[in-house]
Image 1 (cartoon, helix red, strand yellow):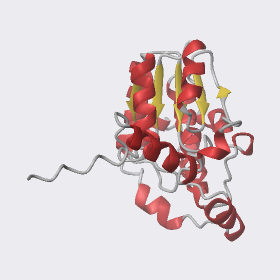
Image 2 (cartoon, one colour; image 1 turned 180 degrees about the vertical axis):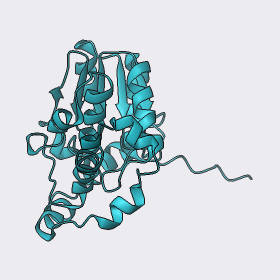
Image 3 (tube, rainbow, N blue to C red; image 1 turned 30 degrees about the horizontal axis):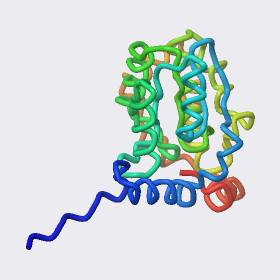
Length: 227
């Protein structure tokens, strides 16, 4: 007798799979912290940034007019992804994956890809990472610059403590890379895109010269357990 294959860990088509998914999501993904707190902010008339939404929260956003959900986390084998993908499908919302990290300088491809992303998605849209602070922050800076035409210096308001971004830790590398542009290229009249496309843009070099402050690292790595 051929043994039956083991069910997928988060196969939402089965009761066992759904239970596993929600249990994993609740505890391993710390979703219990987000039941009453979404860190949601409309940064324009067409885009809201937030932390990882629960399926029932996505239903609320659907009623608010959201058409597209932009997932910045990746996590394609994770419980949050299975639940979010199913919820978007059930609600008729488009789910777009655009993976970025919170402790690396964005690559040239990611930055130019973000410019293209913000031109093609259907709005209104919701953009999220896990906490809504760091990856949502750097992408919000790029959105405000590419889509809304704000200079980088002003768009950088999206990376602030108001959104729970802590620049003193390892996540401060996101602030650092923008500051390199503002100090090294902007005074010479070089546009942000031209800088990114030039040989002067060196993500590995910027990461190597960045040094996280110990207190900030303790907050982001140990206390908040950011991704």
